[in-house]
Length: 203
Image (cartoon, rainbow, N blue to C red; front, side, top):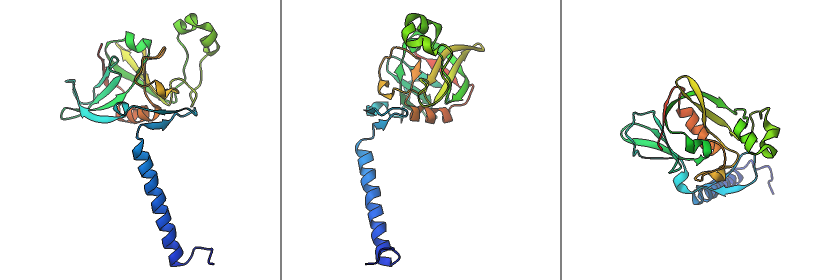
């Protein structure tokens, strides 16, 4: 038997097997478009399709490039041209529920560091005091792979749009944090949004 796979028949067979594996993989992917594996964790989760990034008719009349956050609906919209917007699913923490009005993206960071707020440390020192000096950026950081910092009148509002190590919380009200997104989704959003972009949080 020829085992070095140099003849035409063997090459054709290899191509056929490769194509079958590819198409079977694509079928499996399309059959479960909401399934993902969180970075930094082994927990699998299935995200509802409505929380996947998708282009929709925008229900908000803002100029293209405006970011509209709707905490009660657990959606974030990036307004595009011709009445459309790119919609993302979000999880909303207490800080996110408390913030409303307008701001701008004051800065952006990849793999940002994180520190719990003084209120978080006072409220639950057993859980958060150990992180008082901060946590460096990385796969286990609660801010995830990207963060966009909201500023108002030149000052940091302490309100963030960021990734998460707990993507199964998307579409839910969560105990802490601001506006969280699946890491892969916030990475896509991050590349589409420049510093200085207008943000409107609808209460």
